[in-house]
Amino acid sequence: MDISRKSEFDELVSNITHVHEVMQHCAAKSVNQYLSLRNWLFGYYIV
Image 1 (cartoon, rainbow, N blue to C red):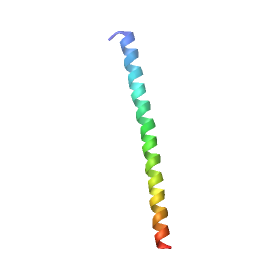
Image 2 (image 1 turned 180 degrees about the vertical axis):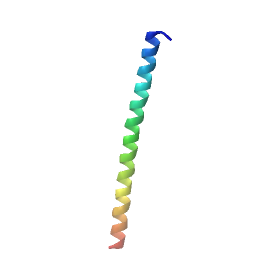
Image 3 (image 1 turned 45 degrees about the vertical axis):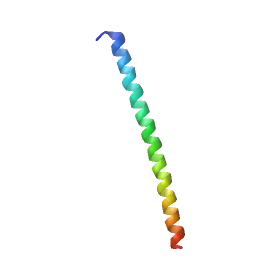
């Protein structure tokens, strides 16, 4: 593999890693929001 192809591959791996991390953060944030809403509703019904 020549240097330019290796550089392109490294950039591709970096981009995929970045997208994965961003999407994982967004998914975790969304789950946390829904769990908070669920817990609030449970508390509302209990009270």
